[in-house]
Image (cartoon, rainbow, N blue to C red):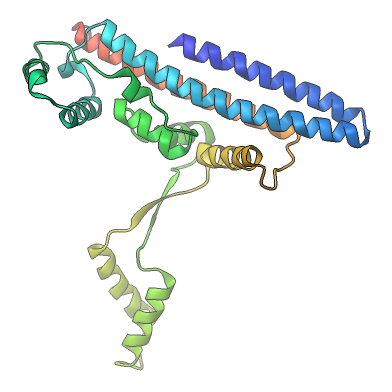
Length: 270
């Protein structure tokens, strides 16, 4: 586990050096100094995103590899991880693999997890991608968990009624044609009945690490695709570096704790 974190910290140090050099160029004054500063901070931000994606891949890969090295059976693994394994394996099942699969189901053999499948990032480290990767191994809502811990927010989610303002207005208009004395309380009562039928949707709030990641990736994409590339100050780059470092430490610790629980349970020490 430590290797993935160690590699990332090395890349973060490189990004910090870029930021320091960019600040020196900015301090030198003139258009050339500002242009050079902005070019370096943009490069540093793209490096930061790529390094973080690599960290996620390596962290999950090392976790799965540890499970394989210790030959852990499915009965000791998190339910989400076992479910993901069974679903993935069933999709690729061939007659010659059935006997081995049955042995895993009966906990006679260790679970042959696919490292490449579980560690595949599929692209930029979005919030959904991170939560999907960690949810598959048994750590659901990890961005929400770490945001609550590090930013002291109640949650990064909010429940939003499916009865939006437009639909509410239409309901009010229809009811008013039936009864002139209709009050907002009556409408509230009807909307609450509809909410019971159509459960409110769970929606992300741009707080905590959700906001940090979305802002970072937005700037990264603008820079990478050359569309109105933003100016990034050394101070802003340092802020991104700090956020990624804190998030990476949190993710690393969550995986380490999960792995420890698995091994303690498997050895009967829990």
